[in-house]
Length: 316
Image (cartoon, rainbow, N blue to C red; front, side):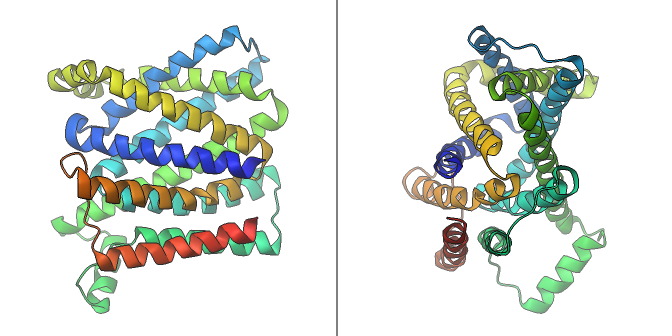
């Protein structure tokens, strides 16, 4: 049951991430601002309390609100990485490391274990995701190694800093998302699904309010042009967020039914959807979204897709 639910959630997420990239690159130009508006939108979920009234004990309430905060922190790092680079690179890069961190956290705190076949599937999905995310360049292997070592050891060359920041933000985002998924799995194992979900959304709303406490962040978030765009694009933004909410509920429900690392590893199917969406937009509507997807890049990405499909086959 959790498998088709996860696939549907990731299909919707691919569309949402494409829209997020458009908003960040073309209109907002600020990860904190975008995370703030996404977090504020979380308050809309509270209308569901009318249908799912639930008041947890204080320790669980605190844990659920904290989980919502963790999710918002993950969004800030996620939007920073997405703003810095191509969606077809960032999404798989973050997605490839989320299952690794999820597996480690789940094994450590939830005492989950995987069979040998599931471990193999997890490995294949991660390798496929990394293949999809690596960008083709003309530099030779030696230069690639030197450049990678320079980034790892903190080279002061200015042209290397963006790549270093991208990797750092991607890894921070992946780890924080993994922490959230492990935390929410623990909550769902002990508390009602819908009631817990609604309280975590309230936690994200509180996190969004906390973003405007520092004067520097408040100045960025309420900058005139960004505020005008937010007002002008409100209907489209709400439509995207509505799809995001549906995907989020479906994914959280799948997590409540299945294994956290396996469901996170299934993000590979999301890369397939994302590549086709971006490829279509780059060819048909380059003003909306344009990415370099030449033949070598597509071949490499689709090899990754084949590996993702193989990993899914092993899971099924």
